[in-house]
Image 1 (cartoon, one colour):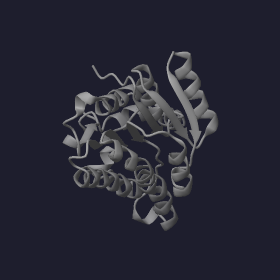
Image 2 (tube, rainbow, N blue to C red; image 1 turned 90 degrees about the vertical axis):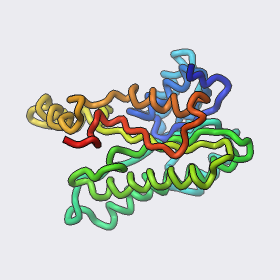
Image 3 (cartoon, rainbow, N blue to C red; image 1 turned 45 degrees about the vertical axis):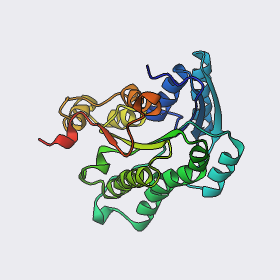
Amino acid sequence: MFSLAQKTALVTGAGSGIGQAIAGLFAQQGAFVWVVDRDARAGRATVDAIRAAGGSADFAELDVSDPAAVAALAGRLPPLDVLVNNAGVGHVGGLLQTTAADLDRLHAVNVRGTFNLCRAFVPAMLEQQRGSVINLASVSGVIAVRERLAYNMTKHAIVGLTKSLALDHSHTGVRFNAICPGRVETPFVKARIAEYADPAQAYRDMASTQLTGRMARPDEIAAAALYLAADESAMVTGSNLLIDGGWATGK
């Protein structure tokens, strides 16, 4: 089940964390994976790891917020079977701590970046009448998280974009879904936790929002992406798959 043999996938933000886990699992399940990241060193390291494990992958350096660069990349690559829009940035702060520049930065990467990739790569999918687009949103795209104003706004926008794409392109063979993770133990999150005076307590505090009492692992998010990428999820489109340990359920 969930084989991606003979499929070509592209994963943005694949130099680390969730994107890296998705790229690695896709390659393990038989896909040729385009690893895309603005950090060339990290992206090439992901490709090296995939090849060392017997998978097939190549690297493309890209700033997803640059529509011309995205269009140029799409012009160089063959049609995709799977597109994963994972690249994103965050910000901590409410209304009084968020500037217009902060909001513009998050919108450029999280929202416009996702739009840019869809705009560039989806037409070929529509032409071949098949494909799966997976947008990484967040539990912040379903509920509001305190002191994350700009981040909440952009992740809600990604959920809305995903639903709109699914509706507008129904009956085409191309599916659009979002994954909405809660807190995930990525290298970035682990590094921030390590900065606290009591890292163990900091982890417990962050994990306490999730009913499971722990954060998710990147491979758990990758498993959900694999399902949405595979033919077995052919009846799934326009969905928001929460992997939040029950966070959105409430307490």
